[in-house]
Image (cartoon, rainbow, N blue to C red):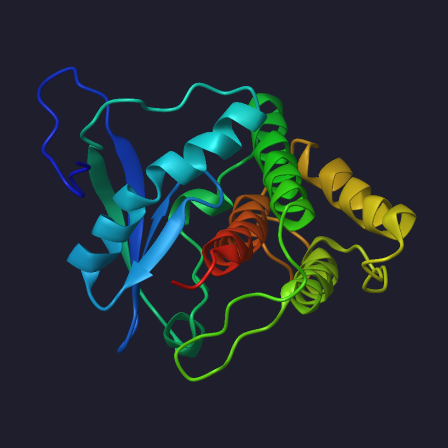
Length: 231
C-alpha cells in the first residue's frame, strides 16, 4: 500500500514535489519526473493520487532507461507551494515552479527529453492495444480512442509554439508528420539553455516537458481505464 506522504529519515531519499492550489483543484507534481503529476480536491488528495500513480509512472521511467523508486512507501518532500489559476481548476497544471527558470544543463536536458520521448512511446503502445470505442462515463460522455489521439496531437502542436516551433497539428493517420513534430520538440528540449531568457511569450523547457508528458500520460491512463470491459 503506497503512502502518499511520509517523513524521510536522515539520509533517506525523497521525491521533490510542488503543490499548485486552485480554488477547486490542487495538483501535486514531481519536479524531476515530467508527467508524474496528479490532482485532487485538496493537497492531501493530490499527494495520495500522485503516490497511487507511481506504478504507472514506473513504466515510463523504465522506457526511458532510468531507475525509479521501488520502495513500498513513496517519500515526498513538498519544496514549493504555488497559487493556482483558472487552468488549475479546469484540470491542467498551469503554473511554473521556481526551479523551472534555472539554467538547464546538458545532462538534465537529455534526461527531460528522454522522459518525454518515453511518454510518447507509452502512449502509442496504449493506443495500439485499445479498442476504437471506449467505455463511456456515467453520463455517457468521453472521447473515443481516435478523438483522444487527435486531441493530444493538437495540444502538442500548440505546446510546441511555446518553444518557438511552428508546425501544424499532425493528422493521426500521418506517422511522418507525427514524427516530425515530436522530433522538433525533442531537438529543442535536449539542448542546454539559459531558462531565464526563454522564448518570447514561451515556457521554460522544464515546464514544457512536464506539461507535455502530463497531458500524454493523463490520456494514456484514461484510455487504459476506459478500455476495460464493463461488468
